[in-house]
Image (cartoon, rainbow, N blue to C red; front, side):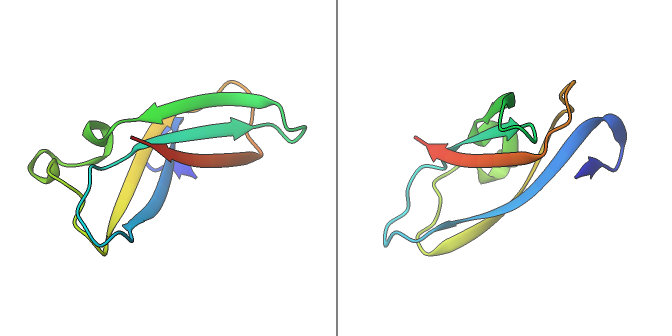
Length: 88
């Protein structure tokens, strides 16, 4: 969605869940934006440092959720779709 404080940025709100029975590292979050023709418009990666507050930098507790807000520069081409993936 449009960023509430900048016309040059976008804001993505999402919730991630650790369904494992053990705590684990927070993931890297990868965001791929695409045009209405399916062409890649932007690829942005976020590390846990980008989306966690400094006092939350530990492990992702088992069976818990985390709400996240990701701010990023608006691409030059309008995005019509997105894909989110995770890695460690």
